[in-house]
Length: 67
Image 1 (cartoon, rainbow, N blue to C red):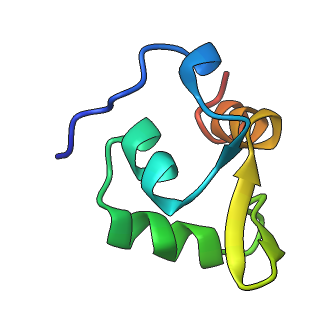
Image 2 (cartoon, rainbow, N blue to C red):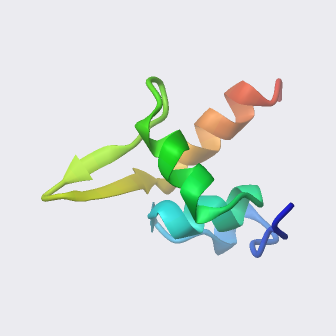
């Protein structure tokens, strides 16, 4: 398992890309790309880039961890 590089939500960038999603969740970049494609994950597609707003990412984590 990959080690999480962020210590708290405030350390996350405003918009997360696949690498930062992977780092936040402790998963590989490839796994993060798969997650970005899943229905229900709050990814935005902007001019060929896929990003996730920090606040929506936090909401998704909390909803999917029972918090």
